[in-house]
Image 1: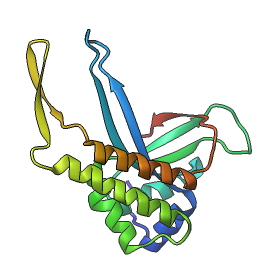
Image 2 (image 1 turned 90 degrees about the vertical axis):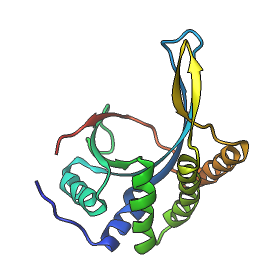
Image 3 (image 1 turned 120 degrees about the horizontal axis):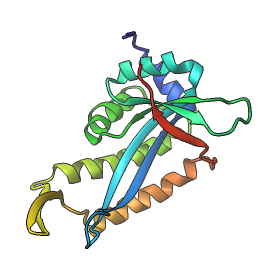
Image 4 (image 1 turned 90 degrees about the horizontal axis):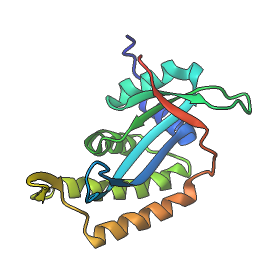
Length: 186
């Protein structure tokens, strides 16, 4: 396995062109229960998407950042001579907060993605602080047994995250999603 790393400025330049900072809001429902409990959660994503023939480059980015997963995205229909792509992504909040953000503080972005990153960083801080505040979990009861669940976001936290997400949309391109995720073993 190749453990080669890349220079930080090179990775920052690659991210300026091919990277994405995304703030996802998930609405999940437990389907196997009669009461169908609904959960809401915020997930910060960082990803880089390149052509499949740059798979080795993505592995080096992963080595450099010491986190994330690599996926092969199979194109459903061919267009613009682009075939399958390789996607590197990080969504673990601790990795995002402790590895990705410090990396881009040390090796800053230069293009318009810099503004997207600054907004995303604010959202990550809110999500990270929410996860680590005391006590982060509450005991809930359901169907005769209890379990620990992450406390819901306050209205202030939720509204601020929604506002940040809305501002970030101006930096996103509108593209059709024509891929299906498939993990790659590298």
